[in-house]
Image (cartoon, rainbow, N blue to C red; front, side, top):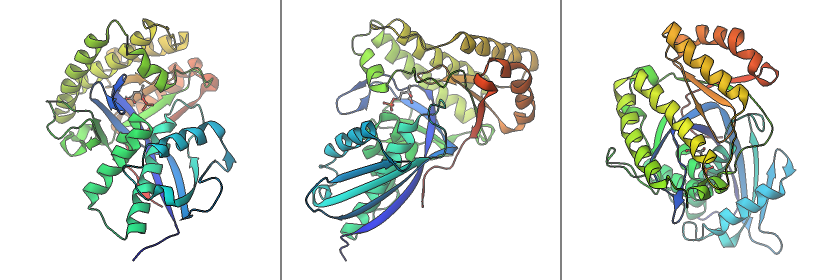
Length: 346
Ligand code: PMV
């Protein structure tokens, strides 16, 4: 039975990468494999309604109740690239309304959660209008591939827990086309991992990822970087499987600093880390040495720190943040999130 109007909602998380995707080729394919953890509380909720096409604008997008010109342009472009995957798109008028549960410019990637929630809505729409049912595996694989075309890192957000994206010999199921969930191989010590996002600055001075990926095109260290990322990917998967927190932290921190190193010595050059970012990194490292608590950091393309640790250490880490890190945070602000189970239909 064929449906020609309807409404669908999906909630999908943001994710934090431990091995960074930085540099792309072809049709949004990564130059190296990456690994991330999907978050629990930092999610985008998107509602998509569709009806047969009439005259006038075919796509309407509202974010938090308001028209957002830049994001609407990005979604329009994204939809323009989807005709191979959803042949019905041209026959419908689609309205999307999205909201985030996390504040804007909080150091949490919103394109991953937004694009993945929209991709999931489109896959559900396909099922509804065509009256088909994909297997769960097919459904999420397609959603991941489609999300990738909106934003590379969004491919990883259609799965919960630990997720890989990008082909690698060290994980036979891995693919450049879509992400692959990795949680079932991950040691219990990581299964309740926490992510405290420490706000150094909420000013929008990050590098847009499209600019960022371009920086790798003529980067003098590009081939060394892609080789390093492959080696790190293999060690990271090994550490996740075996529960080796020491290696996990070492690789995670090195990845974050490599990402910023690549931005600093690219042309043009970007220095996104702030003095307080350095202060925090040093304090985290010396706290780890003196307390023996397995806590480490990573960074996105901005100055804010993601602090990762097992839940069993929460109380100690909270008092460390409140007593020793708080003075270096913007208005003392941080957000605590944790590993989440992935998207859900709403
Ligand atoms: O998905 P994009 O194109 O926004 O790129 C994401 C880039 C990083 O967040 C810096 C790294 C990553 O793997 O998420």
